[in-house]
Length: 487
Image (tube, rainbow, N blue to C red; front, top):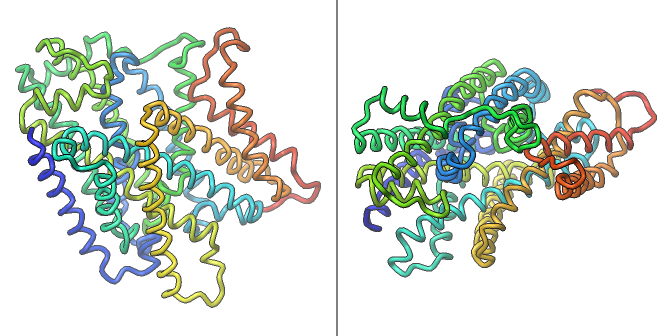
């Protein structure tokens, strides 16, 4: 596929996004930017969450890892289902009862301003680095297959990418993102389904042939029972529950659109609908992985040393022009649907949790809008700088470390919200930042030495649960010897 055709696909795609943004952002107020005027249709939010929960990394890496990890990833996905039930029945009712815009405002009401700020800080740190890493990986794909051939420097590629995201999120915020994410989720799903169809066509496989190829493959093993391994069923299943709770229910980026629904009842319908679709989508991703390896083996195509390159290599060089266009649009949708909302939600959290926009007396709507615009642009610049920093370091290990960092930053949020909901005790608010920083550090030491200390046991996603537990214990140690606080 020629670079010009790839660029044309991406350009046309963004043209539609900008058109949606133009229609949805006209006369958008602060209420529309932050919560879509509390009028977002639940079905649009539910479908859009598919793109939010996935990313360009998922689009490329999950199929590529099937050879090494088989279908063990589904053990985590099954845990997600239970986690989403907790979100629908525990967290959403709390957020709607308190009428929150930023979910970390709960921490202020429950513990105090230091707790609110540290909760928001962990979110801002995790989402900024995570979004930058995802955009970096996607920008590298486009740089390799398009812009390097035209001698366009990487910094300009990134600048254009950030500018496009800024263009369609700057004014409308959540009101726009509900519909752009719905559009992007559609193309993400089409990217997977049509890629499977292209492979089926090349190998002359019908639906039953596709199913039997996946089912009979040794890569489709799903359940693993070695308790010391990182893919042990109960370890991944329980981790999946808590990953869903913290990375959706305790994450402003995922919750802000949920809070834009018309009512709690509709927000619950959104979560439950999204849950069913999410399981199906992840099953499609791992099945695609089996089919990609099967195609490569059947056609005698050499497997790339880095399996992340398998999908783009086959799509862009072996499966034909149609499959190449499907891949490019699917990758674009997966990347930008998970990254574009970050600018809006980072702006929301910073304005409300750190700048106290809602508490400022005499602060006019025009002043709020001007401040919001400055913060929105500021975070766009921060993303741009972090992405260029990744490029300067030129190390995939750095990106892996960033995603590992994200698992550490959500642990304190888990502990804070769990203590707030279940302990019914007050704490010394000024000590909370210390506790929330100490817990991840202790977890890092334990993970580094777990094989030596625990008879070969390897820490995996369960580190999140340990992190949350240590934070919970730390909060109990700094509790106030006074009457219980109201939740």
